[in-house]
Length: 112
Image 1: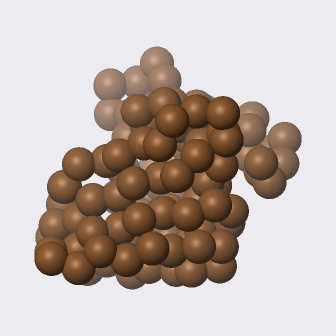
Image 2: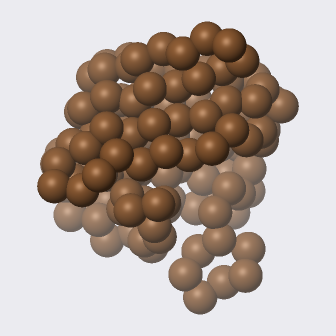
């Protein structure tokens, strides 16, 4: 997996079996998501939130927006408008980066 020690030193949480390293800017967050090749795929059910921008670093993400399902490989980006229902499926061996102009996940030791 490509994330360097400086990213792996960030606060860590879990997303259904994927490792998530969280850079928290107070009101914004960047999630660095790693799903090692030896773990099963991770599905994030349909949900909504504020704007999201993301990029696949390695592996593949299957993203469903409305009735449309797209496969995103390395270098593919996405931009989801606020309130857009969507879901993700992370294939084993996937690393991706996701930016949110809001706090999306609580940090360990904090309630939100």
